[in-house]
Every structure is written in C-alpha cells, then in structure tokens.
Image (cartoon, rainbow, N blue to C red):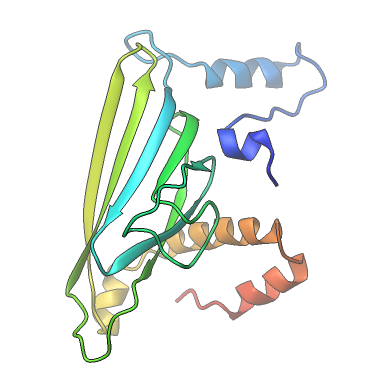
Length: 189
C-alpha cells in the first residue's frame, strides 16, 4: 500500500501504553548512540544503482521511494519500486534492509554473452553529525553455465530472504493463494 510506513522506514511498536517496558526499550534501541555520541542513523538518503550494459535493475523492495531516474541501468521488468535507477530513503540505520532485483538485458542473437557483469551502489546521506557522507560499493558477478561453478557461489539463505520479500510485495497486489502457488513452483536448490 501507498502508506508512509513502508516508504519511509518508520517503526511500529506494539504496546498498550507509552509507559510499558516494551515501548521504552524499543525507543532506547531506535535512538542508540555510537561511540562519538551521534545517532546510529543517516538521513535524507539517496541510493543509485549503476550496472554494466548486460545487467539491469528491476527494482527495489523495502523502505525506499522511486526518484523516477531513467537510464541504461533500468529494466523493463518491474519489481517493487521500479522503473528507476535511484531511490530516496528517509532514514537508514544499521538494520535497514532494501532488496534490489536485477535481470539480464536482452541480447542480440549470435552475440556471445559477456563473462562478467558489474553493479555499483552509490549512497549519499546526511550523518547525524550534520556532515554529508558518500558510500560507493562495487561488485562483479561472473557468468557461467557450469552448475558446479554456480552452486559454489549460490547463497540459499540470501535467496530465501529475497524470495520472501518478493512474495510479501506480491501479496500487496495479488491474491495470497496465487502467491503461494507461485512460490511453490520456484526452485531453491
């Protein structure tokens, strides 16, 4: 749903009153300070994804809002906040998790697939000290048709988490029974 909570990274604390220990402990944890006395948060965050030619970003699922930035890294496939290569996040803390989904760009017939693809995340945010921070993370992925080579780098736990997030997102717009059938057909080996 288009509500503030899933798009802003807000918190929900289920408690009968503000004086309950559950509320107080949660509040303390949210506003925990680092060793320098600053909140463990970044504010007004912006994340951009840059990919090599053969890879496209299909979207993001999590507390992020699309900035509707078009470009060569944007996929035609749409998952979550899609159709963009940049997202805004109101606040990030060490527990913030956003799932990014990628797909292969269509290649011309007869063209050999590339051996490696690259993804770069560029994240800017304002630190609790008031200073701007820029974090750049780049990683590469090797392509292979060899099942043994693929299985060596396959992370079943990460796959389960991503598929769970994708399924939860799908239930917002599809019938739950259809989503369960869809999940049952997906291989996780």
